[in-house]
Image 1 (cartoon, one colour):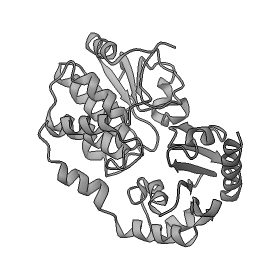
Image 2: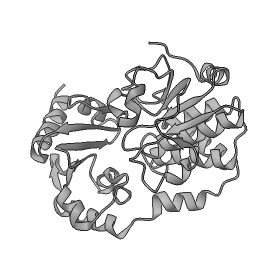
Image 3: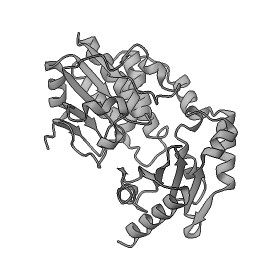
Length: 318
């Protein structure tokens, strides 16, 4: 296990070239924003850098990586992963690089240390904070870089509402805003606008919600039948796991989503000090942060429901 500082990561990035940047499966704002910000910073100092195509990227994020991606044909000299904690989070196109990652930049305590060198700080609210600290040591922040990294941080903090938000996250956001982009349309797009199909899904989830532990734990079940009935796309379901935590009195929110290939995606959000989400998800093959974690399990919705409830009880009982 070779862990390095942000200063050492910056030195490494300046010393190498021909970069391929990897993002994780079911890409969110943090991995996409980090990839885009890092790629633009490397190009600014004359490096050849691309982001590997990720077919799961939704239209919410495609604009940030436009003209930065490349397919399987590129032969990189240096491979960097951003916001990827585990080998299981490598998309299919990225799997050939599982044993070739030179540098991993991450903030997850469940990091598996698959890279030759890892720049890790699990105390950061978002991986975007680490990338910001790294790139500003060798590049000048442009509005495009600033917006991408702002998306990384703000989405991982839930527009600075999640428990991982701290003063450092706000300071990083302010620094990025000073790069010159307009934050209003970004915040409106990601935090104030919902599609009608998304509202219909939330209505269905509310109708089928299971409350436990005196109403402090809530489970919702997003089935393929519901998705098909609404005609929802991945964009309509982006960060839908945050929905449960908006309910008054709920400290632990579980979202179970059928994937269509015999698996169920688990997303667990918890209040600080109540239940360690990462410990729960580790018991069912996943991981993440203390307040937000996830996993993927094979089986029926009911099989996975029972497994998650059992894991939660096991963690509670020590």
